[in-house]
Image (cartoon, rainbow, N blue to C red):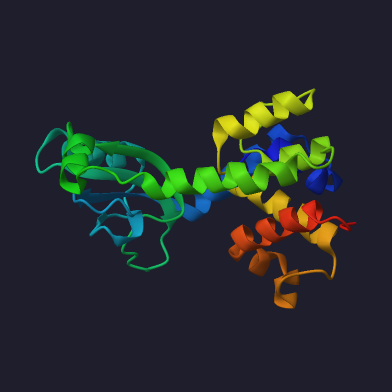
Length: 228
């Protein structure tokens, strides 16, 4: 977690970001112990649905590292994760809490790709095309603030482009992004007010679910002769 972003929230404690992070780490170390999880390589990429085996709680990080090294060095091909989590008696079926190391045996990723076969990118490509056609015009329809850019964009080190053309190039370069879609939904709802295809779509989460139809409606309304 990048605590600098939330420094104002705990400034009343009279601590610097470094002091707060240090105390947070000290509390975490008292409450959590190391565990090692391992799972054989399958075609399933979802972490929660893999058949993980849990080892621990372990006495310290050195013991956890020994288990990790042992599992990584020998067959079968598997994923190995080291976590720190509370010793609360819950036999969790998958890694939880703070993952401090993620490893795998040699060739694990290549084997998973072979098992999965070719990845069908057509759905993602179609989503990117729809985003460019429908969402980008919404985002370009008004000047954006620095706060809006930071809230929507996934890469913190990038700054708000100085010109509309640079912003458009950025949006086209990345394609569909969830944060930008949320901002586009917000803009459309502000523009349309009560003039919605379905009044239930006034709720942002519901409007987001129907963003293709909502953005197309926004576009058509703006193109109408008497559109406001």
